[in-house]
Picture 1 (cartoon, rainbow, N blue to C red):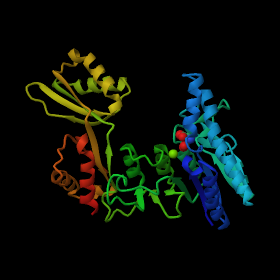
Picture 2: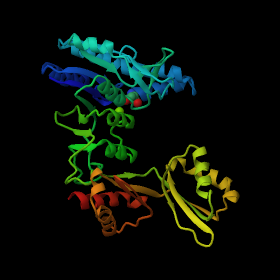
Picture 3: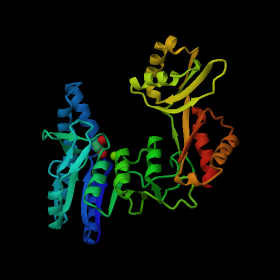
Picture 4: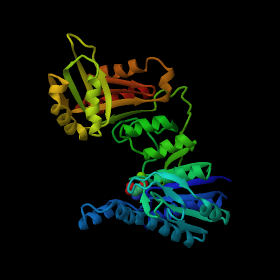
Amino acid sequence: MAFIVKKFGGSSVANADRIRRVAGIIADDYSEGHSIVVVLSAPGDMTDDLIERARELNDRPSRREMDMLLATGEQQSVALMAMALEKIGLPVVSLTGIQAGVVTSTDYGNARIEKINHDRISSELDRKRIVLVAGFQGYNKYDDITTIGRGGSDTTAVALAAVLRADKCQIYTDVDGVYTADPRKVEGARKLDEITYDEMLELASLGAQVLHNRSVQMGKRYGVEIEVLTSFERKPGTIVKEVTNVEDMKISGVAKDTNVARIALLGLHDEPGTAFRVFRTLSNEHIVVDIILQSFGRDGTQDISFTVARDDADIAVNALNAIQSSLGFDTLDLDDNIAKVSIVGAGMMSASGIATTMFEALYDAKVNIGMIATSEIKISVLVAREDADRAVQAIHRKFFD
Ligand code: ASP
Ligand code: MG
């Protein structure tokens, strides 16, 4: 007998048939004698639709009222699922975030879960009921409903699994696991049995958004094993945990990020404080900088190149141009026709030649490398955007065929 937290995303509860199918999955686990807490997202596109309805009335509604509205989506899911389970004769109770004791910070729309007072959930489980909890919501110290950020139901599920000390946390999505590359674009991409929290976080930051990032961070902090799987087929998915068998799997995945732009400042003064002033200017604009490269100085000048999200490029360029004379650079060069291609793998820390293999794959595919950055579990290169898919395929082939 195990204690399982299961979370189903919006597509798994989008209509009556799907709700019935999910009820069947829950019923199977329950009949095996497991204790079960289920977290649900709002059905289908309901959250987007509610945001749209709000906009029709007010383009700047208060965030408190927005949370009041958005929390209704998840409430519908748990009530409907409870009815489907009642119908097949199972003992069940649905709870809102407040009833489940999910206490959050005050910031509406993007609140953090601070603690979970789980007395109600625990007593319902003692009575052998299946407990359904509305994801994505909680309440703050003013007793107001809060939501915890788009995609936040994953985080509700992992938080509950941590607090209740569940044996596992299963997150059902519309993909059946985490792949070595985007299976729609890369032939031979395969599903991973296991991946580490850190790898998962890297892949998410590279655009392979399967789980809400905060849920992975929370899983790592509290040691909650998370399984990503599909509700459309009964088969095992990918397990996210601290240590995996990295003996023969040095690389877990190849990912591409096209939301990136490269800015180069040429001919900066080679003196203390230059980098500080460049990056302070950007952080004042709340711009996140990714890869940074500074060349060594010559003739009293130096160059600094870095990447930012493509959406931030214009703001960054304007902010830097505004202080051109005080920074004293000759030229600012912007390239937003690029992509970042990365390999991620906890196993590469202890392996040699990984970078060589990656660069060889790019050479074979005649892809030119713009910039290179490395971390303990990642190597990223900048390439021309038109080369990105070819680069991913070539690298994937080299490592996985
Ligand atoms: N329904 C919310 C959203 O669409 C939360 C979630 O799906 O996890 O963002
Ligand atoms: Mg989601």
